[in-house]
Structure formats: structure tokens, C-alpha cells
Length: 125
Image (cartoon, rainbow, N blue to C red; front, side, top):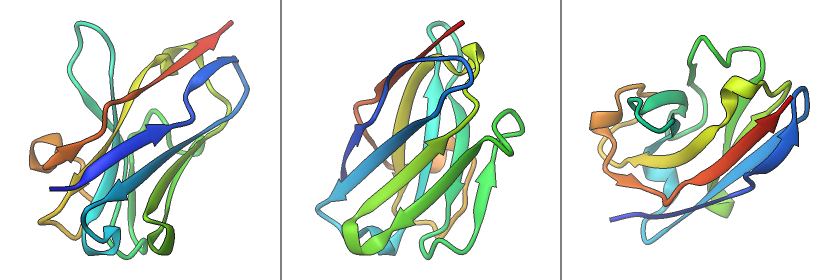
């Protein structure tokens, strides 16, 4: 089982940037795909971005293409989500997840095995 800890959420104004980080432990992160998801109250969880185990392939939800960038530093056991030009609609809790049996990228949240505790992102007008 992988332990995941997110950080970097906060309150920003629309148009600003935030950088979310997810640090993995207990298993080498280079072995599995990683993803960022988000979930608003009363709504289904949705994929934001996913990255293959090597970092060579990525997937983005249409709503964040061109604004968000997912990357990974396997040596530092870290996956990062750089979020630019934030919009009020991006206000939600963001979760980091590990697909330990997949090489990724993978947009299906049911295939992810381990999840972080989430970090809140709030974008004000």
C-alpha cells in the first residue's frame, strides 16, 4: 500500500496559480501511474490529470487542458500539479492517487488503489 500526502492547496484569486504536491511513501513511485482528482460536495469525483509511471505520457481533463500541468520526480517520490489561470470553478478538494497496477496514464478513478487525504483549493473572484 502506498501512502500519499498532498500539500499546496490554499486560497487564491481568479487568474492566479497554485502548485500541488503529492509525496508517496512505502513503495517506489517510479513503479506506478499517478493521478490527480477532484470532488466537489454532492458531485462525483472527476479526474484532473494523470501521468504514466515513467512520466512520458499524460492525460488531462478537457476543463484543465492548457492551464494545468502534471509532472513527476521519481527520485523525490513526488508528483506535482501546476495549476495556472485558476478559475472559480476549480474550487474543490484535490486528491492524489496511485494506480499501483497500471503504467498509466489512467483517467478511471475506480482503478486507483491508494488515495491521499485531499487538499482544498479555493479560488475567489
